[in-house]
Length: 514
View (cartoon, helix red, strand yellow):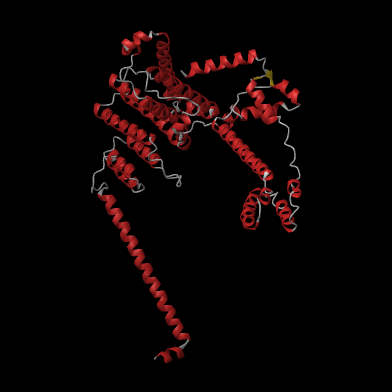
């Protein structure tokens, strides 16, 4: 209905301009010897749409220009003492006072009215006739009040036009102050400049609203990609090996190939910018919305009234606000992934390299004919590697920004690689758990602490040191304690020696004390 009304409105204005031989802006500028830009600014300020100097102006707009913009300036106010001077012939003192009092308040509009009201109250008991009161006719006051009201009205109109310009910005203002895609974008930023009215009331408005929403989301996403094209290319290069199609290895079982392929896909979704996937989803939803809109355009509304569900396939659709939230979160994930890459670039590159290195190491073990127990243990460690990478992808274990040389993810990844290289050592697992237990002392976040606790398979109140390590640690403690006691004894001896030296130098002081 809104589109139909807009079309009728356009036809009406075209017909009216045609029959009245409407003038164009440049003709009006020549007629009144005025700048064309001034006319355009005035008309747009009054809410009249004007494209350029060739635009035609309706008769009402033309009359508005003549009344407001090209109206001759009002004549200056005539000297006001004339009606006051003619009447005061009977009294000599009072007219002089009225002259001075009426001449002074002219610059102050509000004060003039108040003073004259006071005069009426003061003159009423002293006046003998109505002629004295009649000399206070206020054409001057009314003119001043009229001018003041016109000024206030004009300022209000200007303020209202400014508000309308800000509420409905021009294309230039949209480019300068437009809302751009960011990881903190809210729903009003996505719905800006989109007219959506009650999409859940009918299937037609529902699919049209989805079409508008996907179009706006696609534009925001493309704008963000163009502004950050170099950074996007860098991220694509970093995850290039993950984006390649996984080639199943004949030496692996089907379950192992499926497992590695799923892990590779997850890492691509976690570390890539994800713009391609979001674009595909938006495009698919947009095409589906347009398809439904075409069904609405070419359908028989009588058939729709009889059986609407069969035609539009609209059995209990997802509410529009849920679709809008999903689209917003999807496009907002792109800048989130970009920021995560910038903050954790070394860790992401290290995770990708280690993932492929571990798969190659498993392939070599199979080619060398390793026993089943060793292969199973290797796969268990590879599962731990993927769990560590997955946990890191959610911005965990990379939070120690101030201490750049201490990042738990890098430390634990190095310990896991060391465990893999020394799998044949019977103490490899115990050493791994012992060292991971030491890393937990650096972490004060419960989520990370609990993850590492289960990741390494730690047990509460269990000693992971060997007897030799325990004896060595006790020996170190004993040596440190002995050194501390020796230092204290030496300090006390030095103090006693200093006191003895002072007493030898000053024997008189010792006798006084005695």
